[in-house]
Image (tube, rainbow, N blue to C red):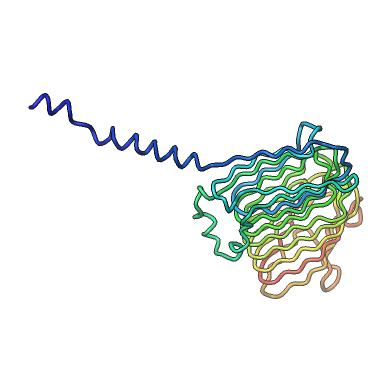
Length: 300
């Protein structure tokens, strides 16, 4: 064998690997990260509007009480560049976070598109909010995933609209504020809300289109509550503590499924839980079901 030829031979692997590494670095360099920290300037209330187009959204309480909000937002596509508007009116702060492309056109696409969208097009938002300011949230999710932990945040109002998103919402401690109304709208995604009994709410309104919604009322209710659940082709599961009395006024068709374990029929469309007379707290719910399903279960 020609020794000289052998020394000059370059392995294809030694060529390909540096090229892959080079192009990988180019792709990684496309990521842009912006940080927006809003110092506290005496705000006593806060309104937050979030319009999130595509990617992953993380929300939690902020340990540093010197700020209204701290955030870190990463994006790969200029169409998903985050925008922030903040102004103070009197003692009330108003915050608007949004992307250039809100992803609304994707709401009506088929479910498989969620699993096939390009990771390089995703954005990641990490948001932390002050624990001492009573805050109202209006959140719209387009396509992606959300992890929202409202524990320790003083929530006064919550509106959550999910298009083609999988979202988990948690309340792990008693909310220090009274919530007049909570609105949850699910399109083609899956939404789970845990700790509704800790939210200290007066009323809830849930709409589920083609996706699924899970409502866990764990936590001791401080007051009676009223609510409405509307289902199209999707499914809603409700888990209620067994010491809470529930009355349901049902509007359903023969094509729908309404599973009420532990309920007695009082009238044509009225059902009450077996513990109704002894329960100290009660929840009154109007249920409207098209072709979907609503299931009630009990938590010990």
